[in-house]
Image 1 (cartoon, helix red, strand yellow):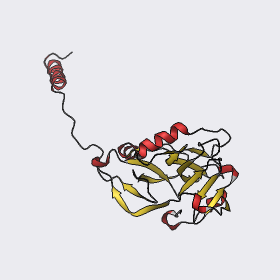
Image 2 (image 1 turned 90 degrees about the horizontal axis):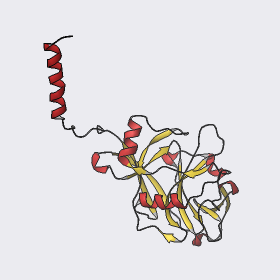
Image 3 (image 1 turned 135 degrees about the vertical axis):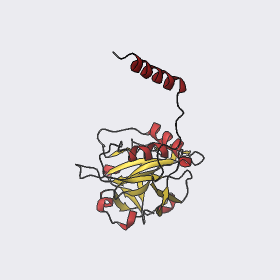
Image 4 (image 1 turned 135 degrees about the horizontal axis):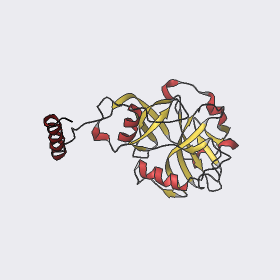
Length: 227
């Protein structure tokens, strides 16, 4: 099932969902939930999997069967419209998870792939989120005819929180926040917004005593022998 973030109804789903599929029992469905309670980022969470959340985005799950047909899970299972078919972009017999969001200067929403339960028949449930993303990234085949289907960044929490704090994230979409992802693949997957309240510098760097003494020596020399 797909849930609307913050209860916002977005009509971009209409660009992706085609006709309802009757053989729903063949499709693995996932329920994505963005938890309302914000988590505080600390240095202890530095290696947690994380991604950047576009404003008013949807989490979606897509199945590519052995024949290359693409299905999207929502309240029902739908056949993806032709523009969002993953045939020739993701290997057949795969289950991928994505964000659907609007980008600047485009009327067509983007499907950003960030995770996968299965790629080319290989189950990835034993891997952590970043390792799964790496497998998906390696299998992903960019198509210049489909610029609206792309890989979405996934990495370590410390990197993204740091870059968001210093406004170093360049994106062609409006950014909402950082989101901590789940290392575990489950029928219900819970994600959390992050609040970066902790200072980035958590330890005081050691002083280079030799360098400091040399600087003091030069300053004394200048005072004793002014030019």
